[in-house]
Length: 370
Ligand SMILES: O=C(O)CCC(=O)C(=O)O
Image (tube, rainbow, N blue to C red; front, top):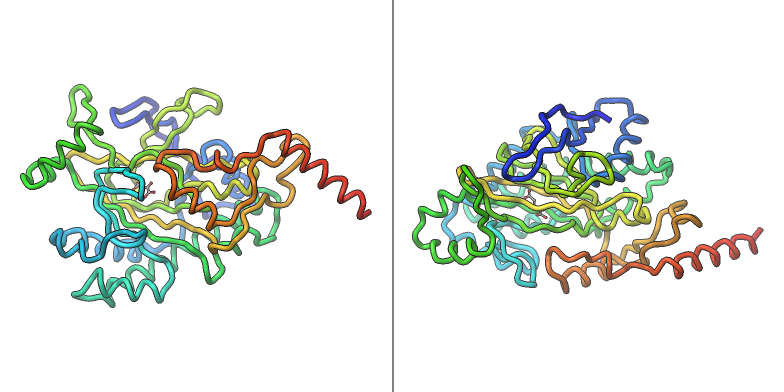
């Protein structure tokens, strides 16, 4: 595997893996498709370099995001509340999760973007909507490319099974801009002090010898198929991974070194269409004491009615069906009923005996057709 060289060890914001898996998209296709599947099996996470998302396109969206988050609070609130799309501050989801973050959750289809832009950026909605559309177009291409590579690495050839889920016109994909204000800025604002102290008592963690960071976005897995994240050069993202980088070793929070030129990829819950072969990664984001961080995240999701069911060849006698099939709408309903950190896939788990019986039935049906 192509692995970034990094000094092993740990820092106060999470351990540092000997190497975050890095996939260089300029390398041979058959090699990278194997590497991607391997890293998705082990970590559910990797970073891609030499991708085709132009730096100018990312910079344009980052600038639009910064301009929005710099607006006075009352102006930003006009784009909220997030129900579920729109501007949100501190509250994440519907079940009382709180983080030190403000965000804009946006639709990824062109006409909805234009409509939203009129509320989000009254000064120049056209500029805002162009920045979002250009980025979405580029990052969606990258999502397609990664899913094609995953299909190839899984031996599904050019079946297009995964890609078609996000390509369809009714795809429920989203774009999220997260802004994590620095703690020192926040602390200097006396209006925020009371709220700060409430959050602090829950999330502030004191560590020796340095200014602490806080939970910006609590631990969770992403429900969608694939997540593509790009952030500015400030650290904050952490993944739960084998501490020593070796599968089977103790799990620990691992700090992901920031790289604004790269795109970070998370396997989402819905890739359980691989029957547990690819794992969705638990992750969280911490704030930085001195500098604010901004991330731009594309969640590639299917149509609400899409049926999420194991891909061909993923169910075998040794690996009976692990999860019930579900529609994306059903999965979202389950997600909205749970707290951020709860394991949603557990709600769709099949008892293994039931799964084995399904394989036997399937085999005997296939036998009857021969
Ligand atoms: O902002 C980040 O780095 C991670 C945020 C995240 O996990 C999310 O928005 O689902």
